[in-house]
Amino acid sequence: RMSRRSLFGLGAAGAAVAGAGAVGARSLLDEPPVAHAASTSAPYPFYGEHQAGIVTPAQDRLHFVAFDVTTGDRAELIDLLQEWTAAAARLTQGKEAGSFGAVGGDPAAAPDDTGEALGLPASGLTLTVGFGPSLFDKRFGLADRRPAALADLPKFPGEQLVPEISGGDLCVQACAHDPQVAVHAIRNLARIGFGKVSVRWSQLGFGRTSSTSRAQATPRNLMGFKDGTNNLKLEDAALLREQLWADAGDGAAWMTGGTYLVTRKIRMTIETWDRTSLTEQEQIFGRDKGEGAPLGAKREFDPLDFAAKGPDGQPHIASNAHIRLAHPSSHGNAHLLRRGYNFVDGSDGLGRLDAGLFFIAYQRDPRKQFVPVQMRLAREDPLNEYIKHVSSGLFACPPGVRDASDYWGRTLFE
Ligand code: HEM
Image 1 (tube, rainbow, N blue to C red):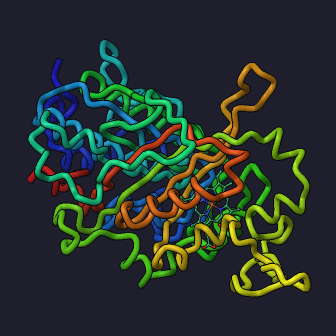
Image 2 (spheres, rainbow, N blue to C red):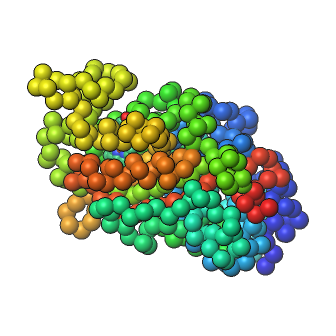
Image 3 (tube, rainbow, N blue to C red):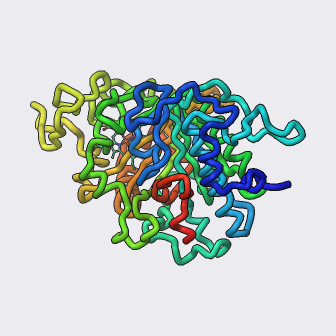
């Protein structure tokens, strides 16, 4: 059977362009994409210097997937990335995955879109791709292109990682305001990848746990606290350049304009948390629960004063409070762009909800950012009594796709 690309006699670029006015376009919106989506149904631009889905104001829903590459053929892997790019350029604009769509194709062949997003708008869908350390093993001749910053994460005290839901050669983060749209996108990428990749693990998330723009209100995690107050944000241009985006001087020139992603599935024992006193909960984080203000201050965005002491002579923000241990000033000014989601994967058969935080953080160099912060937290954070890290992922997210002639990861394979 011919591949979809050869069937249409088009490269990835042509497929994306040809798709623009094709039959079966599911979007009801014809206006061009805008940088700040005007509504939760509008699209975000797919093309750009950086991939979307990183500083994009965090959408409400997540479907994250990690794949193992099952082909050993480098050309097939490149072909897949080109097909994925063409599909992603369409899906993020509210169109079907292939230009024949779920309807209007060859009735003797499987449809080139699975159909469950027909009639739904773009819903702010972003698709962000990443390459795991295992992609740089000897299979594809990429060993000498592995960035130093993509060094395997060390073991952290107390973690209980499950290998089956950790790692992966490739990942795709789908974020959207509609879970059906996010799931549809991942499902179609998996379908397109049949025979070349297989799903290693995937995670659904609801309820963003971070703001990545000052225009957004701070959401709450499942412990009931505002999460994302002191996050790196879209508006922090100088900090993003310094702390988020890789550049040629970092050693791997192909990653210029890219960034590194760490995921951690963190299970919460919320039943125990829910029996913990409010005072203790607030002391653990160093913020109050209602407003999200630093302890000793009044408003959410009041500046942190770690030296301020109460009448008892003790610091308002405890010496081991989460926000003190994680703060950039405790790590030589290392910031993270957090972009996590709440999850509830049903219950565990022992009368407990299988719930927690699917932590996602982007940064320029995990060795200087995630690793020291997490090492400190793993050793000292009193929150550890209520959480358990069960999965871990590390990925190099290449720069953005410039236009319809470009594809995800081109700079890596040139
Ligand atoms: C801040 C919750 C895990 C890094 C916060 C805040 C909350 C919170 C409520 C305060 C609001 C804010 O500024 O965003 C949690 C929960 C976690 C968790 C419930 C686990 C289930 C982690 C992990 C890391 C991390 C694994 C990184 C390794 C940070 C950082 C801040 C922060 C950098 C900002 C500190 C500051 O500059 O003020 N977290 N967190 N957190 N957290 Fe976490």
